Length: 402
Image 1 (cartoon, rainbow, N blue to C red):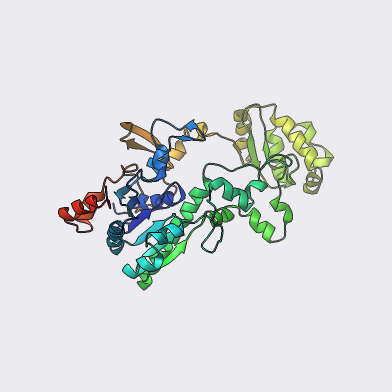
Image 2 (cartoon, one colour):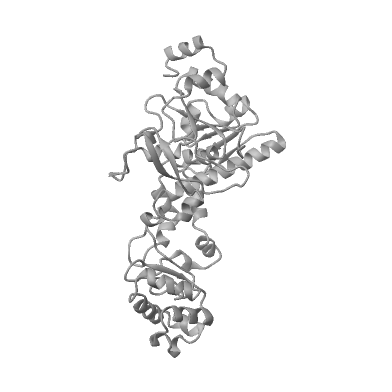
């Protein structure tokens, strides 16, 4: 079965997370992604064995999953001979992707001007921290940019510390935005025959991630930028409630019919059948009292019993699961949001995050986990770039390749 991006060749000069995951999305759907790494150690992600000093398993899931379906070339781009290898690769590629500092790329003679002169059809994609026109030179991290965008200030209870959304969400989302930009530029190149440069920043991705609250603030609703206590939300029917087990999230509009359904699910307690909660306007005015009353009822039950009652009453709600719960969810595996893949490092199948998008005729797949450093250097130089073995040996002697 053919793949959606079959025939597209990507030079992946990225490290850590946002850039590599952008290339990973392209590789999952058939692009020929060649990861170019420094000979000494390669992508720094190869060394990740723990996160915040906590072991993450007996295999390097950080690097191997983000760099799945890729080939690896080890080239010393500080050397002119190494740059010449990359130029020959640019001639035969459609995309150049990097999240290295623009100054570093310029120092290696890998600017857009230089590479587009070699291949006018090239899509030159960068992943920066703060955008192409930013003057900020400090390093960008998922958590520091999330703090900058206002997302953290919006989360959590008033008077309590802001909450970091976590999980590298900005990097992962930034990678999706980068992959989208690349596919758009490729489509335009197919139409016009001309390449272009593009940038997808961590800052821009997280600002987009902040919608719709950020858009509400732009429209004049200043309260949308503030932390809101769950004990004071304007619509008590759209709120988070504790049980004797898990927390649950109820999501219903403040309408009489929906409030009646919630009362049925809670067993028609007399405390909810009072005039103060009779109309939508009264429920909004007496929101704090209603939230406390509903919470007193939900705490009397376990989440499974309560969820069954909510479903029977037609109330939209969900338990707040943890990762242990979600990896046991059959629908996540059926949709290939989770998958299994063979890991050479530990000689067994391992569980990995899968594909966020399903295409019916040209589906993505995971063919292999991340490559060993430089494992494809020689074969690509001979078969793709046309080097003779004597030339390869000479380049090794000069230190351009290991």
